Image (cartoon, rainbow, N blue to C red; front, side, top):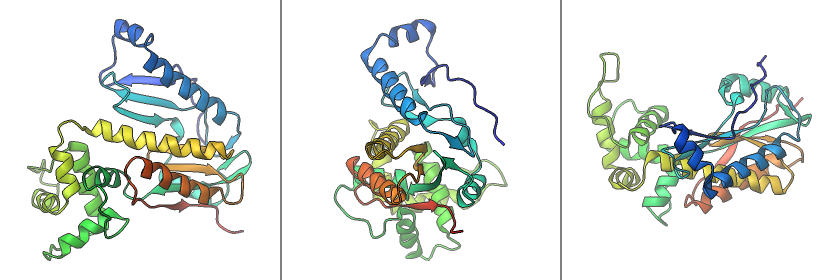
Length: 275
């Protein structure tokens, strides 16, 4: 069971840093702030016109950083805190429902790496849609031992967040090979180099790009009357029409391509099991 979320005090939240009362009063008079509020209120009005089972939903908030509407911009709601294993179980057993319809989860494979690939590698197509496997293949050429996709993903996510490779380990428990491994990964990954060297593009701006792509996909589905809820780089889609999941995949791929990630691949992450 999940407690009912508290009423939203604001659909747009400014953090890191939080504005002073005077700053907030000024921002609330600005067209950019009012536009964001209007977009979120309209989106929530649409989403709240549906019923939900298996999760509590009272609307989305959008968080921005650095008092800028070009930084971060991720969507937040309490249902996103549900453990992925629980969410998968509820989806597969048909207990997670929107308007009494089953739900599918679709997501983008290596989302942020694809956005960076599109930004720094331009029109060059990667060898595989899964960019973690591209890195893994390049590392195996130098016979690097004991590599897994999960380990590569862990390193890449950490480096994207830090916008740099590790230079030291923090404890005896931490992987002693991480510094050397990340150095080798960066040497073989042009889009990571481009990102590290681009002083004008921050990790918060990358998250904003990703969030704008997700919003675009939700809007594409909305035009077809299909409700969807965001979880970072994936969508929970109400199967209100038979091909809703396929339309969700197409919407994600179209939205990411519009944000320079033209080689991205979206796929079903979980869906109701046949009865």
